[in-house]
Image (cartoon, rainbow, N blue to C red):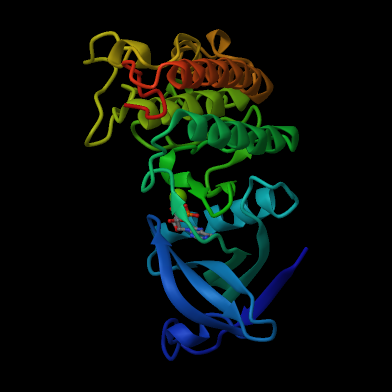
Length: 311
Ligand SMILES: Nc1ncnc2c1ncn2[C@@H]1O[C@H](COP(=O)(O)OP(=O)(O)O)[C@@H](O)[C@H]1O
Ligand SMILES: [Mg+2]
C-alpha cells in the first residue's frame, strides 16, 4: 500500500501555504469542495504530471468521521483499477500526538465537469455515460463493496468520452448496516434511510434516481428530499420520465422506474441487468434515429421530429 506518514510537528495549519499542501506537489487551483474536504489540482514537481488532491483537516472532534471517509475511500478505491473509476493513488497523513489531524489523498486528475454541472442533453450521450457508470459500479460490486452515494455530483465527465465514478467516502461492504443515515437527499434509497443492510441494489436505486434527474431535470421523490425535491410520503405517485416527456423511450422510462422501486427485490438485481437493459434501449434508439434520418433524406422538406435532444 502506498501510504506515507508525514509527521507534522508544528501546530496545524500554521505555515502550510497552498504551495506546500504535500511535499513534492505544487497547488494550482481548487477543483471542488465536499462537506469537509477540499479538492485541489496539484502538479507533481518531479514529473510535471497533474493530480487531484483531496484534503481533510481535523478542526473539531466531529471532523474525525470525514478523515475516516477519506481512509475508507482509499481502502475501497486503491485496489480498483477500472477505466470508469477515479483512481486513488496514495494517501498521506499528518499526525500530531499520534492522532491524524490531516489527511491528503492523491488521485488521478480529470479535466471536466460533473454530470450535475453538465447535464447531458442528448439521449445517445446519456446511454454512453450511464453504461460506463454501470460498468464502473459493477467492478465496485465485484470487489465486494457498495458505493452508496451515486448522484450527479459524483460522476465526472472528462474529454474524449471519459466517464469516472468518484467519491467513495460512503462506500461499505455489501451487506453492511450503517450506524447512521448516510447518503444524499433526493438520491437516497429507502434502505439507507431505514438503516437496513445495503447491497448492490442500493447503488441501483441511487443510479435510477440520478438517471431520473438527468432525463427530466426533476428529482425523484425519496424518503429524504433535499431543497429541490419532494418527500415520497408527501408526493403523489411519481410520474415516469415517459409521462413527463413522451419522447423518451418507454423501455428507458420503465428501467428507471424499476431502479427506483422501494423494495430492493423489485429492482434490477445488479449492474449487469441495468447495463443489459440500457444496451437494448440504446440499440432501439439508434435504429429509430437511423430510420428518421433515412426518412428525412428521402423527404427533406417533410416535418421531421428532432429526436437528438432530450427535450
Ligand atoms: N479527480 C478529479 N478531477 C477533477 N475534479 C475533481 C476530481 N475529484 C473531485 N473533483 C471535483 O471536486 C468535487 C468534490 O469531489 P469528491 O471526491 O466528490 O469530494 P467529497 O468527498 O468532498 O464529496 C467533485 O464534484 C468535482 O467537482
Ligand atoms: Mg462528492
